[in-house]
Image 1 (cartoon, helix red, strand yellow):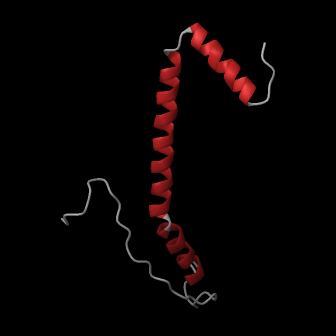
Image 2 (image 1 turned 60 degrees about the horizontal axis):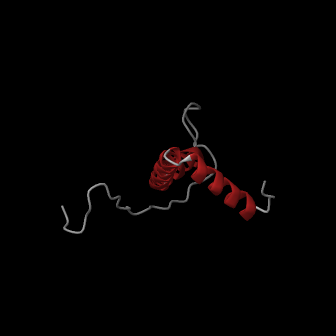
Image 3 (image 1 turned 60 degrees about the vertical axis):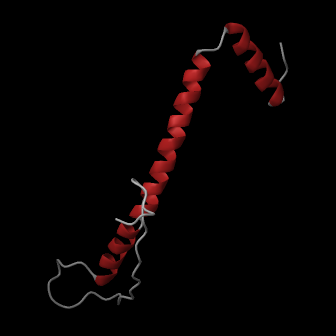
Length: 95
């Protein structure tokens, strides 16, 4: 294990780019074409990016849940004042 590796941190690997012919080779018609196989490799190659997006979304979800929990602890007066300020900031009229 390298000293700079943090637990849970993702390391990116190298990407291999290949050129494949569009024609399916003669023989077994049930075999996938090289173009289809290349497409599958492309999809699999996006896994790390998808994981990063999910990780970011999960972090955002936790922030939303924390904010909701914090809002539940507001008093009625604090909640009314916050709503009025938000309405004014959005260009709405105050009551």
